[in-house]
Length: 85
Image 1 (cartoon, rainbow, N blue to C red):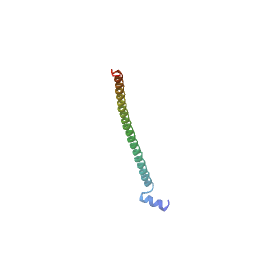
Image 2 (cartoon, one colour; image 1 turned 90 degrees about the horizontal axis):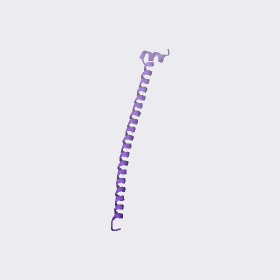
Image 3 (cartoon, one colour; image 1 turned 120 degrees about the horizontal axis):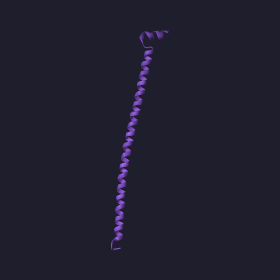
């Protein structure tokens, strides 16, 4: 063994420190993965909410337009059927 390896063995920092470092990297990678999943879930939830809101707004606009069309048709029919014409 080399002097450095002997010193590391004597101090107990040889391979064990590599394992500790590897565990730190694994923990960091796991944390990043978890954050990505969490962010992705938040994005999906936001898209779902926005989609639902858009559908609700489209229905409301559609209802208003339909009512307006019906009212205009009634007014036009009423104008044609009035005795003044």
